[in-house]
Length: 581
Image (tube, rainbow, N blue to C red):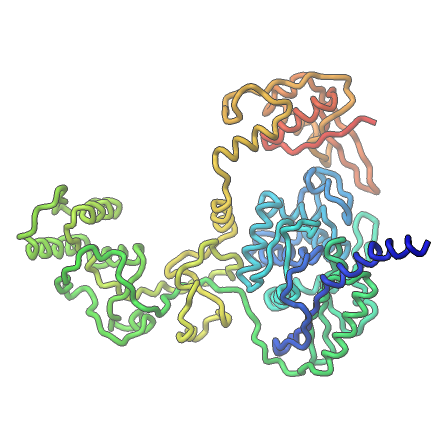
């Protein structure tokens, strides 16, 4: 017996050691930004449901931009409804308001609602996770990668204690009103009440939020914010063996930190970037548009004359101009428009006379002014290939400062940051009145403020699979296999054979029987082939005082229902398969 006990002891002790190796913690004084306690704070950890803090950050951002409201309705998809607990157990096709969705994430930590929000905002959870990671890196969470909106286990999803405290502070700074939701102690929905998992709200004085998390791989995690008088702390604990031990450690490090905390606010909040395009001071590299090494002739009096030592901001504000600096093609073309196309070609004829002894170009350009900017660019391209100098490369790239707009805070910047933003000249201070935070970057000069859709399309473009990958994925998803290639868009799906009627397909749940019937009819029209042998039926369901109607296609066996549902999804019709009880 003693030998058996000695052999078994390492098996019992190993998980405890593994958990201990994954623990980390950090405390930051929110008033000063000073780190008051740190233990493995920069080591990678699984965030678990702390992930929902970023899901809520992007949700609050869209509410502030008026692209989402607390009364907006979020539809529950089959994918969302299939998530494992913790969840609200809503049926596919049901809807929930954004206000209730936020309450469910904060208190119940509902995974089904996190997925539904992600799909509503970005089209799919995968797309939303890319936005989450992009935003994380933008606000300084450099060691964080998100793969889903809920925090359910994924080996490629990780963060650090420091990164999560960065997010906690940004939630407080950027959305002070929405942030109050994290103090919610209980949430009621459909007759049920859910108590917040963060028990520090009840037992630790001054706690004002914010989120717990747990998976087997992560252990028990907690990010907390506590305010006592004028002192304000944020703290994170990762990898607790139990919820009780996690809370005990959190209380201990907070107690010690309060003794050292400052009561004076010196930390500057980091507000979201305001879309106020400005030229940044930078070294002047060779111009992209300089097509000839010869010295250009002097410009006419209508073009500003260069005066060294003037900053871009001063050049835009006065009639004095800066010495030539390199700007992008758009700014240079704008300069051509300012001096006029006629003057442009007068300059070019003068340049040709100075190079008359050179061999003629293979494709000489006409001296007639072009009818459009596109033609002007095409002419410049021909000159570049022939070696003929162009006045397009001789323009003085004076500083141009677009008039600042009153745009809303740009929460999501483009996926490809400008060169100036990647390595800003820290010697140049922001202009008076600028809301750019220290270390933040501005947009490329003259660029329109980014939108969520623009940014999403750019991020997706970077991850878009090749045609061959798409073909392979399509082949894998089709069951049973078909002899036609997967890329034949004109191929007609084979209708599934109606079997014993043991399974049915549900396409949604609606507030009226009439609406359910209309949706069934519309689905049959869009996928007539696969539904030709199916029968339509509605099912009345009552939950509390609410009655709704499920829309079904019946008459399938298991494989036939699966095949038909796959084809419906290819037609952008949401569905899932149910076995008839």
